[in-house]
Length: 167
Image 1 (spheres, rainbow, N blue to C red):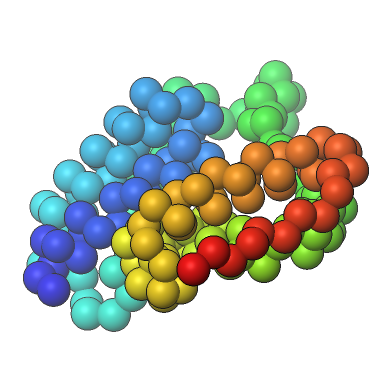
Image 2: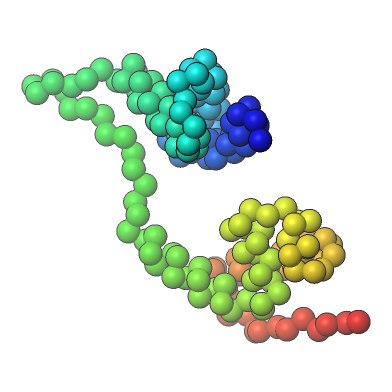
């Protein structure tokens, strides 16, 4: 894989991180563009190793510089520095526990597809190959699994259903 292809492969992760930093899609896209521009102009400085970490470091530094440019530093006696909003994390462990329990209530066929496509980010064709089923089956199991998972997480107590294997 060439360096250019490796950088292109990181763009989705950069966009997710930029969205988390910037808070909205437009600013996130600008941040990704600024990051890629800086990375490509300084690519000669990169030492082979973890390209993702290097790109994320550049993005973080670009973001910090942008925030500093907009918000002047506050000194003692000046107005208090504005506080950047931070997402509350107290409920994260409980939400993960609930998600784990809901996943365990899904039929194995649906759980496998949800984990391969949702967690492992496999394409439908890759998941179909891993499970040895047609792509359409992956799509239908994924749809039913997502629907059932949403219902379980919303508190609906659905009856367990087992899919019948038809030959």
